[in-house]
Image 1: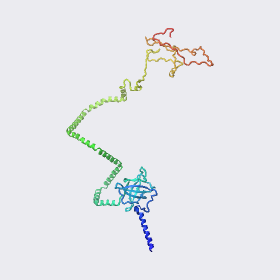
Image 2: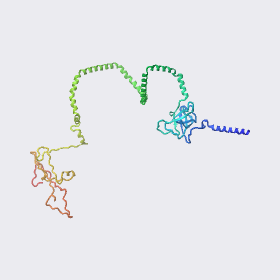
Image 3: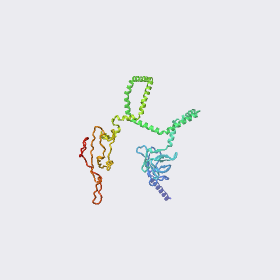
Length: 432
């Protein structure tokens, strides 16, 4: 029996010492059975809360009411006004950008846990990763029973509960016998509230604009104060000249009366003057674009605007027509065309190709009798072409040593004569 007692005492002592070793790190570090499986490589994130209430380590971390992790540590931030909660979450859980943390309760008197709430609408940005931190703006907490009871006690003790009955009676008196008017008023109120709800963005924008204006005015308040101080002398001058201003306004009133009387008396004359102007205005309207077109030459006289396109730098392209004093044979008035003589072998289109043109013989030229009495006819110089074997029908072509006939020349060379003789002097026989 003694041996059994000693063995039992030894077992108790061993268990006690082992339990103390397990609890050496604190009760909060002791893993609890039935917790969430965070896997071998969990994600560790932190969340800041204004107040963690009675949240303790090893509390659950849930997503959509499903346990996906646990609270590993709770510490106080450096500012001393908020708490930092370290969360260990299974890596397989999807936590997109915009995820928030909310301190919730399983039941009215149940335990606290941290719920991770994913955004309803996608938010641009990377997903929550290990080492990320959720600030105070991304955390919140549900209303506690203590807060609800405290608010209720405030209403019951210091609120207007005693006035509810009086308010109800007054509403009954107002609505008695007026159900139609009450319904109409409620419908109008509904329409008004609906209109406000539809325009809430515009109202918000207007309030933001007022806020911006207020900020700008606040920044320029020194300038505004200076401007108001500068207006004081001007306002004082206006006050001092009040009598003169009133007198001026009265004079303007009398002037308006005289103007109206004058216009009434001269109404018929004004109408007649306007009727007399009607034909002039009608003719001006008929002239249309002709009048401004005719005025274009005033600044560029004697050249219209259309001639400016022909001026290139300091040169002007013009066409000149020249009338000679001598007239062609058979012409009775100035303006007749001179006959154009062409060489049958070199037509006029040869000039455009750069070919030489042989001046024809005198037999091909028209008579040069002067058509103007008293004016001698000028003598036209003649260029006699050198005869070629092709021109003499009796000439025999020289045979080619090779047996081929010699080709005819294609460009006869003209023989130049002496310069043009003096008009009115007839060349003598034997002179060129």
